Image 1 (cartoon, rainbow, N blue to C red):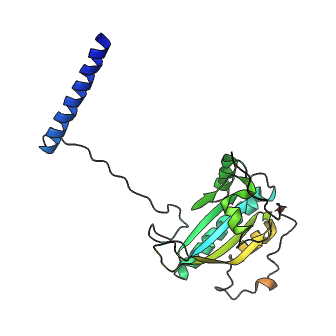
Image 2 (image 1 turned 90 degrees about the vertical axis):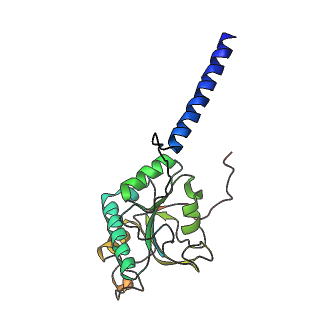
Image 3 (image 1 turned 90 degrees about the horizontal axis):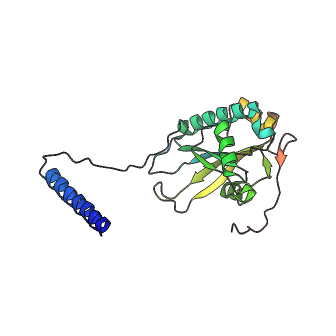
Length: 227
């Protein structure tokens, strides 16, 4: 009984305190703190879109923490340089830009750590191995290519409305697979076919899979249950 009465006293005291606090706050005798919540927009230096728009140009890196070629220092430097170069080209063309990192890792933590070491991406996808949404769309899906890591894909996106993800259409501008091809493309200034006069076929690089890449399964089996 004593505990029950004591608990009732605490409840009554708390209610009185809340009532007194509200009264004093309304009468401006005691200041009442206000709390607000805001949504932040893109924070990385590469992103050029706002909270009310979607990027027109995407640079998508696909790698894996257990892929030898995805962890080479040269690749890291090449991807970071390419992100900067494509971002600058997008700005020159009046296009919004974002860099996306996709890790073909089963472990979310391992994939995120790998992507963190590669570049400062605006968006990341990790976990679920070859079944994750990034690979399903940009490697195995309608915008897919050869299943290998590392690779860099630049996608142009067009939407009917800048403020609504409605009727969005994407197509691949370039795709480079393998360490040497990515490095060479970056050294050339990460050219895009509609923005420069460089003939990529005469530059010594091609978009096909190289020996310095790690092949993954070329097909995706039906998604297994996660439970």
